[in-house]
Image (cartoon, rainbow, N blue to C red; front, side, top):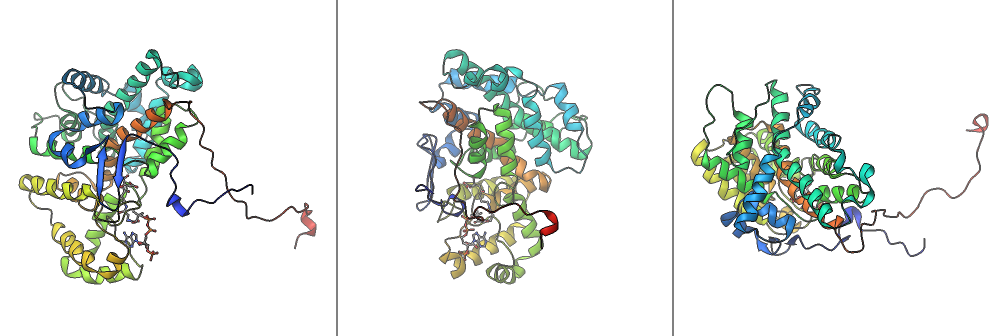
Length: 403
Ligand code: SDX
């Protein structure tokens, strides 16, 4: 058909945009946000400062940082109507289902954010009013991501929602809402807050992964950003993507002990099992984030005690990295291999782990969404073609004449 070329399966080698946000060199194991190496940002920056960098393209000045943090924290309070929306879920709903719906529902509460109601150029005009409105939705979505996540957690536990006191950090406010039992004062834990902040920073963006592509595909029809983020959240939910951190722990629990690792690896090689937390579409060496996650885990284990699954994970890492099957396929640990061990030792429930991926990834999705809205020449709806391989033209057959 007119020179159409089918892309490689899963868009293996297909670039659909140019971007100035995140750079990955999969062969060298390099990850940079707006040119800054992830290793430097993990040590010297923090999640909200890096969020500003990803979205606006430069490290903020002190006053820009303070304003951004103030706006995000101001918007972290959820509208009362959001509470009744989340309360509608059964207690045993997966928190990613709840969060996905919560983002979409949030969009219904802000008609000024809806291009279908306010006009198509709401986010594409690029003038001061457009940028200010875009900023407001960005503050809201980043601020509310932790609150909606914490509310989803409490729906699962049948507990009431709590509003954090002003003055806590982004992750501190989140941990307060997650664990505050209402009786005693929240005891901030600087080590755990810092560890979660580093993990949020590492998960903030990763160029055009499946969920980011979903956000842009959805956003290209000029739908409101809440609906686009909800679509991205749904994509991230899958076990091949953001659901892998939960799948890794289920895998380690099913292996049982380090002694069972060799037998498990043989099952993987016979394709009876998948080694979750290993492999990556782009990285053909270790995911650079996995080294920082591993270091962060050691910090956390000093406070929480070592997770008993760590030995099995380390044995699995050791056996797989020496095995020809994995070496030939360039399979190495990705960001999800150890992150779940940290979340588990911090007391998060297993099915909440993908939520801990989605919360920070809202920033990367928004950075790419904003880049698309403001791209020179305006937004073009994403509408790929197909190569048709079905039956050629044929006439209708009445039902009594069918075989
Ligand atoms: C994330 O894209 C991103 O940037 C994602 C992410 C982000 O920050 O947004 O980095 C986050 O999603 C990390 C990935 C988390 N997923 C998992 O850990 C699930 C386990 N991994 C695999 O499902 C797989 O590695 C993928 C999905 C991550 C990548 O799949 P690809 O690129 O389509 O690779 P593939 O399936 O074609 O694998 C190539 C070969 C195949 O063997 P052959 O058919 O060639 O013989 O490697 C094998 C695969 O069977 N393989 C695995 C494997 N991953 C790939 N074999 C066993 N265990 C694995 N984990």
